[in-house]
Image 1 (spheres, rainbow, N blue to C red):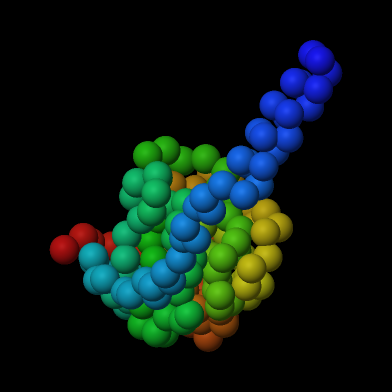
Image 2: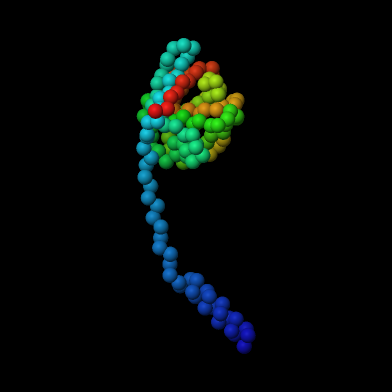
Length: 160
């Protein structure tokens, strides 16, 4: 009798779990992230200005972890500047980033430390800086070569 009662209870539980109300399916709505100008950044080779960009600034945990993810593209006169509270070796990757970029690592003295060129979309491999960096600047792939940007070049930025 106990076995029979246990079987009835198990069968009822199984029936309730498999045939009960289905949870409503959640729809995921994807919305492309659009550019919001938050400042300007200028790049210098010695004392000569070589380029200026409108920039978005990533300076909190959510923004620095999200970066340029979920965007289809970016105009060549735009970029994203990541500002960190300290200077240390940085590691970036391309998770959920749909277009190729150049990743420019910059010291706390505003000098280019290293450049990761043509980072591959969606690639989750680590792309490290070659030294301590307080800032990271992301621009479209190929622009660092087009501008002749090299280690030791300087940046100046301002927030609006």
